[in-house]
Length: 377
Ligand SMILES: [Zn+2]
Image 1 (cartoon, rainbow, N blue to C red):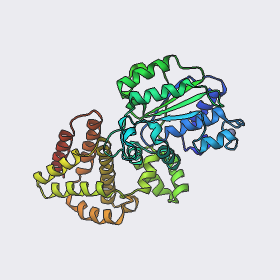
Image 2: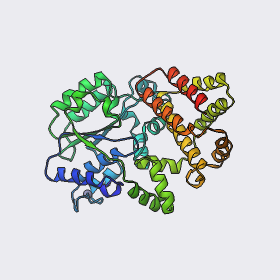
Image 3: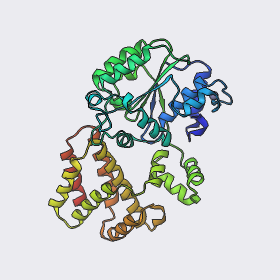
Image 4: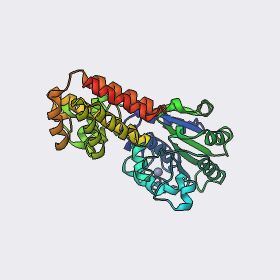
């Protein structure tokens, strides 16, 4: 991937290029982003630039043998590590100690098709279902043994660790030694969407690079070009996506495709409207029984749906991107809902996401959320 193929954060691209050109790249870089910003694409573009035989104009050439293999993610000195768990895709032996090396095909396919993917998309691709991915001490051992070998052809061995905040303490302690005294030529490119969960000891050893949310106008231009939206619609989608290209694209591509999310939300809204607290709590129980990443994904879906209701209520259904099933439901709901519901329920969903991230009991989180929907609607 060339820098020019990644959308946005142009100042950051120039900074990375300059660091390579002036030989000031630290041996451990931590990219801090919000989900959907595509920091992993920056990590790959950086590795490609570093190893390109024919750099020009602040970018890799895209044509030399190193660039071509970076594009297919087959460059032998570029390695990936990411949170995993056991999956039906693994053999019984592999299930006992899952590591990311068992999932490279799934990882590569996902990364090539959508470098803006989030945790749930990865979990789905790996088939780990309701379990959360973890970077375990077994994974840390794999990383250590990969980095102990000589590079094949690069001057560097590059280790991209996606969601480095998912390292458990044992893994972090093992990696800390490597971060402190890495074998010569090691380059760590860490990515996190939860920098507050990174251990301070790890953070202090990394050069921190923050991706910025996209400018609304720039993103609208991208959406116009890529999806053929008119100017006004593109601007509205850019606003709704809150500066994240990944979120805008998934909003456009998947609008309403997740029928389980839809049916749980519909159940909750219907029960709240019918003033049946028992039914509300039944749905809350179903939500609490999902895995943590699925719970988060449902909250994000519900926020998106409430935005669609809000823009429809404001008389702008053309920018709601609701599919026909959603549209019908929204037109039935909107006249029955209090004006204050949109803001209050969105805030409650934000709070639920934060509590899920902080490992508050899912039963409590969703009972509280259900109660709030019941009261606010
Ligand atoms: Zn090249």
